[in-house]
Image (cartoon, rainbow over all chains, first blue to last red):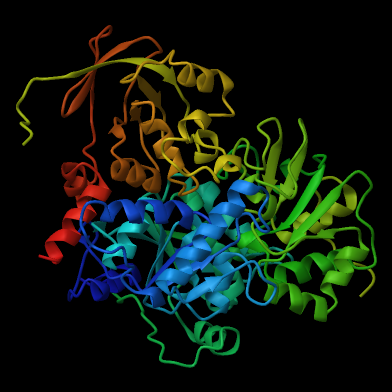
Length: 431
Length: 174
């Protein structure tokens, strides 16, 4: 029996000729990523060594990445102290891939890893963040783990007792209509699968819509695969992957384009005709509560958010700017933009996108997770409603359990900023 | 050594019922994520469900009490505080299903989790938990337990992931 991409990667990383869904393996980890929650990982890591007389030492400082993004700059003393402790640990252990709160290296972990060339096809990537699924966009097997599990990986260099997940094949055909994006696609898929429809499974993406999709869109699909419960989302590596690694990530080493076998076993196949897709909105308070835009059009919005590890990339900001250019966001609405990295921020300054956004009345914040997880930089008031390009709308997500969050694409977010109500995108008159 | 044939049951009482898709944002809101120590996290359990939070923090729900939840409990973030906060109250967590990362965190930390896809019980019901089933004492209805992923058994047997990894490290250095 042939293997899926996930099976091939796990077989290689476990030193086996083949594996099948349900097998238990202990793969070597190629990259282990954490953010501010490294503070908890450090705690658990030290506890592992208690009473052993061994010196706590990570297995390979070259393979650990730590990126500050969840609370940057620190919103309070507790976070600042955690960040300080992490910096000390990074220096002591010699951790190479560290991205501090700086405009020459910072950003959201799920953008920093791809744009820095840290993720390659065929890798096993673990991260103490559920959206680690993002990195499957480059053909890696990437999944989220908890802090104690990461502490084990730091100590042993492996992911312990991984049950090889079954794979759902998702075939995307046809061209997306104008302004309908990868975000609409993945929201539609989550609505179809439900929030637990892919729990303990992998989503492997295929079809001509994938062939024609840039890496930025693939990152969106894989990022939100976890919202259907998926362990990982994977786009098999291809010419586009190579193009991204060479020209965006400046990676010039070898690349192994891991492909599924023609007779690989899939537990389910889902086909979507992209040409028939329209704008999708996830309604409060679950990500799988997905509706087409016609059912929620006109809903009044208080705060628009464009950004996050899902939709804070250069093309997302450019799409929003193309809709807002020369216009003004509606009175009574505030619009917050969070570029996914400082590199994207600087590119978007250079090409005029930031100027368009700011001139329309949007506030462009520093790159980071921002208000997505309800810590700082844009909480909602009681009874307020947000329309956001982020990835979660759970009760309390944006810092207030008496508020509600709708999720959408950058185009829908920008169009809605102009009216103050959920609206369909239209091309700006001024080009 | 465990003895599967032992007729011993854990007796517990349903202290609270929760719906499907309870996310980690509800279990442990993001605004408390700078708090990392397992000794400090319990105070914020279900902070946005004030009634449940108050009952937990005040001790109104005794250690060993059960929370019964629906499908996909713990969906969302990988934050381990969502498991440590519940572990701090010594709860038994019975759900129709768990999201992958939460279940893994719960096992790693030794939080007692029971997957019971058909569980039907109301607040106040007494439950007897056996190795393979949960019995509702009042209705005498019996509900099959789905075994935890077999990949995790060695971690459960070791008493949690820290002890398991410590054992692996020590044996590789001797």
